[in-house]
Image (cartoon, rainbow, N blue to C red):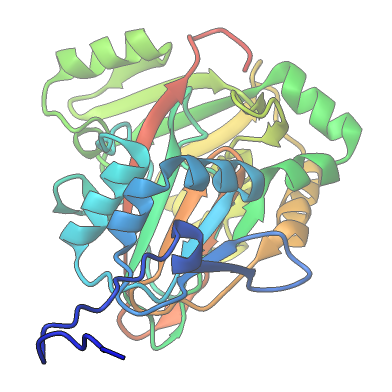
Length: 345
């Protein structure tokens, strides 16, 4: 019997091809919560960018179901790598224009998360829902988790909508929300930062195109007013979502000592305020019910270095818990969407 062992050292190993499904595993952080969906590598050395590039339709499907996906445990180390991942998942990234909060450009079109003092809570909200043009997708990347606190709570906007008293919900949906903003010394952000220009003509053109009423007051002060949606239907799922920032803009949302100090410093002209579309004051009790609906839907988790949270901005709201120590979370936005001025979403 003749055995052919071949030449020593030339035996080839068979390559093992793992299916895309075998490269990652899915789970939920909490069995009692449907979000976020957690996707982690099932084997060593999985490139998140390469996997995402090969599984865009899968990610898209999972995101529409859960509203938020937490990618955890991948070897994503830099802001630049995060930006490339976001381009894969969302296409061309958006500039942060018509701003509401202070942020700093980090790289390309990646920004710091809202730069409010560490001791402050940022209530749950949908990004740019105070406008009629917004990003459909957000990505958050944890460069450095806080020493203590600093979670980014999230909430299902469909659940928030369903939890609000129907009478309150119907009035908001019918009358919509009017946002009034004052820009100037000690008021809101400077208009130059909000509109990202020093040119008044460009500001006026932007306002006209967006259906924003505007009035120049003095040498460097600007007043704007815009009526926007209170609720909306997701363009792909058709589901109703709560989608406004009345509970943030309404001056009564501030703590009493902060509100009194602010009103005294600005001669009773708050930097920002919110009303029903016709200018009627929104009852504080109604806003309290809305905040309670957000609190009831809130899900929180502790950031880990390298985490990426991908959010459908209409399906899921986000916020920020107070923290201690240094913390660096950066954000990318993509897939612009919106409606014409005067239309109901």
